[in-house]
Image (cartoon, rainbow, N blue to C red; front, side, top):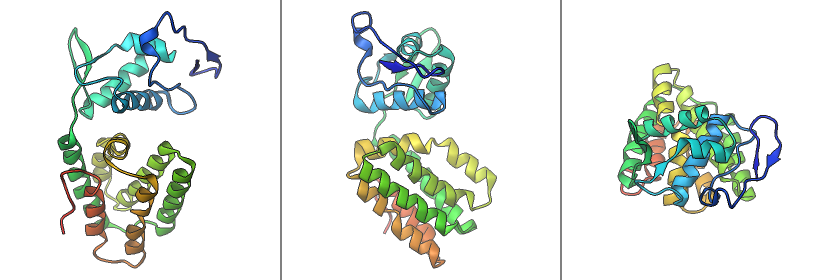
Length: 231
């Protein structure tokens, strides 16, 4: 049973008619449609529903989620930009095998951007504290989605405070939320640890510690296996 994206009603999905479509895809509801479809795709990639080389059939996925093909196509294009999906003419979309090396490249670029941002402006410390508190609440509630959402918002506060629109645009183009899900769910440990990792950064900004940017960079790189923070 999945939620209809516009009218909110639930409809039954015939398990006999589409037996291969049932695992690992969440209902689409409440969030922006493209975002929910992208999230469902990412969950399928992480859970192993789709393995490297598997074809993702746009029409079939749209029918499963009870949406049109257009937002599915948009979500697939976003994941192709992030190098999680690859497509070719007349063959459609296939899962690209992503490794720790892919994650490392993204996080190395992200770490450099955020370290630069920290040197350009001071983020609002009360907002940072609020996001950390929300991360703890999400961890206690077992909500990975909310934990990631507030974690990304925490880092966005820092980048936005730089006052550099180009830097912010490049940072956002990395697909931070998607890769954060990947890093936490595939390569990290408990959610409370993730929330606690942000507290030293808040304290550094609170006292205008000139090492805040370095601390931020090391924090980001620590989330990526094979790319330890520089001592």
